[in-house]
Structures are given as structure tokens and as C-alpha cells.
Image 1 (cartoon, rainbow, N blue to C red):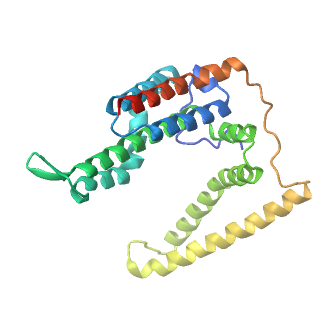
Image 2 (cartoon, helix red, strand yellow; image 1 turned 45 degrees about the vertical axis):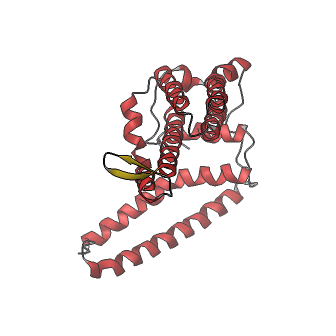
Length: 254
């Protein structure tokens, strides 16, 4: 993957977090999310502690909070689901501002909202500090299945190629009088999608044959050598240690 294949969720910076090896950041994000999920939903102050840990990582990585918050809107559908639970959950009921709300529904909505939000913020932090190519390197160093890294690498490489093909086909249709705003043009759009699928499939066959002719063995080559040190692991997992303490605290106070 060339340098031109930048991901919109990556925020290039020079920071201690960006310089950490990718496998450490992947492990830290995974363990951090596990700590959040394992925390009882009644331990309200603990979730504020998780957010404080994330804010500390943002400061160290020089990530503006607004940059993260704008991209966290991806969880909006889950927020809508959480808002509905207090009105549809079972009893007992509580009164609030003239509304009759379900107490288990309120706790369920809080559980979905806070844990989902912290999970999204953690994922965005990982994506902001780690280029996509480095994420693949990290998965490779963590001995992820070779098929997973191979499929992901090829998908990322050719996603822009297919998107460019789709744009060219759309422009060709528009130049011939196609107007996608009208319902009777749905057939042309469907045929365009089918043609794009066939072209992508044929392109994939040609790429696969070209790879076989060049000695492809079914696994991606090692992209870079692993130079991780013990100090890197200590720095990278320090926030996870704090999160683990917060999770234990949550079970004590719940």
C-alpha cells in the first residue's frame, strides 16, 4: 500500500502515542474496551474515569477533542435506540419531569450509551494515531490469521480503484442523459451496479493470476521487522493498567 492511500480517520502527528508500535496500540485498545464492558453499569463514577484516561491519551497524542467528537457521530443510531428504552422497558416505573419511565430501561439506555460511546472513542483514538498500513503490520505481528490480513490488505488497496471505477461509470451515465433522481432510472442504476460487480470480479481474477505468476504463496510477506521493546509495552499499556484498576473499583462500589 502506497503512501497515497491515507485513511480519513488517521490524524498525522508527531507524538509518543503515534510512535508506539501498532501491535501495542491494538492490544491496549482491545483490553481497554474489555475493561469498559466488564464494568457494572451502576458504577457511574468509573465511566468518568475511563473518559479521563482517554482525554489523557488525546493530550499525549495531540488530538483535538473536537476532531474526535465530530467523528463519534457514527454511533447516532445506537443513541436513538438508547433513548427509546426508558419508554418501552418493563417496570418498576419512575417519574421524571412529568414522564413515566422504566427504571430498567433507564439503566439499559445508560449502559448502551456510555459503553458504546467509550468503545467508539477508543476505536477512533486507535485509528487517529495509527495509519491503516501500520494496523495491518500490527495484526501481522500479533499473529492474526494470514487470510484475514491478506483479505484486508487487498480490500484496502483496491477499494479506491473500485470507487474510481464507480465514479467514471456514473459520469458516463450522466453524460448520456441518465438522471438518478427519477424512479424510472432505477433500472439503469441497477445495471450499472451489476456491471461494476462484473468488472471488479474480472479485475480480481486478473490480479490473482498476476500474483500467481510472480510466486504468490497465499500469505502476505512480512512488511517490517518487529522492533518492539519492553519500554514500549510499558508505555503503551499504562492506560490499560489504569482502566483495569477502574474496572475493579467498579465492582467494589457497585
